[in-house]
Length: 83
Picture 1 (cartoon, rainbow, N blue to C red):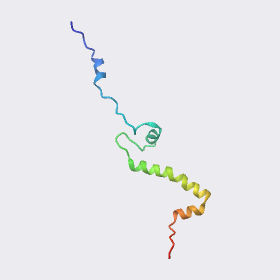
Picture 2: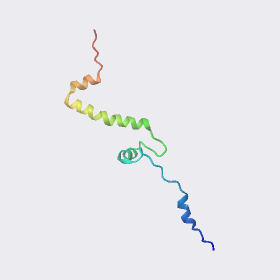
Picture 3: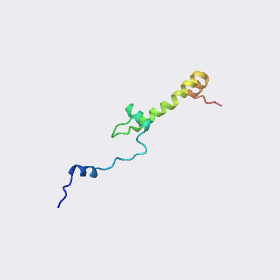
Picture 4: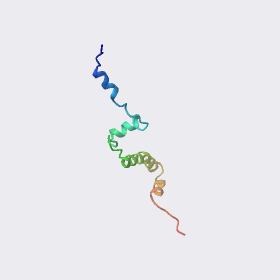
């Protein structure tokens, strides 16, 4: 008395579970994918770092330009005292 095995049921047991990642996922990761910074087999780390630097420093430069123009000039120039 053999019980026939369902081959379709066995297929689900043989696949490997999805990879768990603490880095991939979340809204920031999805935003980077939407901007084309992350591809399936490429991390494009240099471009991602450049975008993060622009996102963090650009608002500071704009606020300094609007609120303290002399501060912006001193920030962008190297004014060393000569003695």
